[in-house]
Length: 268
Image 1 (tube, rainbow, N blue to C red):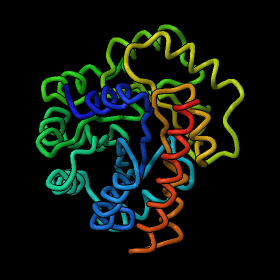
Image 2 (image 1 turned 60 degrees about the vertical axis):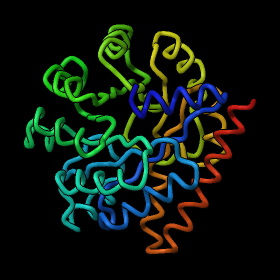
Image 3 (image 1 turned 45 degrees about the vertical axis):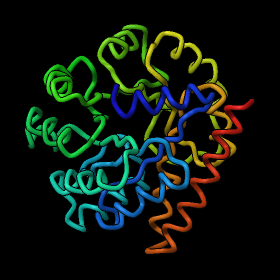
Image 4 (image 1 turned 45 degrees about the horizontal axis):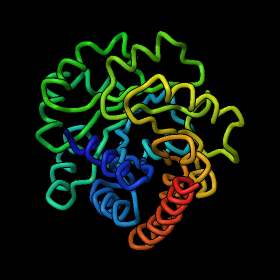
């Protein structure tokens, strides 16, 4: 078992759900990201998604697009992100997922990248624009290196797509709660509970829900129905307002509140 499966097994044993937090690697610089990851874990994050900045995102709303722009402007590259994970592994064993688009991985080389990512201590890849039908090359590379390859499901995913993700996915499955791009929303969709229950029943891996979750109350609501709650844009907004020690303090307080929301949802 790897760090991701171990973490979900440990949470299940305690009757808890996972809080998964997303930040963009390199926003505003990689030194800050290193401190942020450690603060997120300290505040209660169970898994960390590090966004790989990309110049032409297709699934990201304006908040994460701007975050990606800031990271690219600071000189963030894929090799530099792997160096960051290597440094983090000296300080933490929190599961780390790299989330991004296939173009940078293709340019790097799938086999080489999977090997280097595994050596750095990356636990999983989530490639937003790579459906399971087109993932054979990367899947072979990640399997050979012991890295999980995580796939997305959406409200429009049909039975055949769910079955394909079930066969090829590992680690966990990421369910996108709404159609459209990333971004904080004011409420959880009314149809989410029924759909998550349906999809979760067709899977063996843990199902986490993300896109649009922005408050502890929403995290509490989603934790009642899923195995984990992903918060991204609501966290990334803090990078627009704060810097340095103040950023870490504000992020830590918000993540601690989100974790309490997840715990309340678990207990209900």
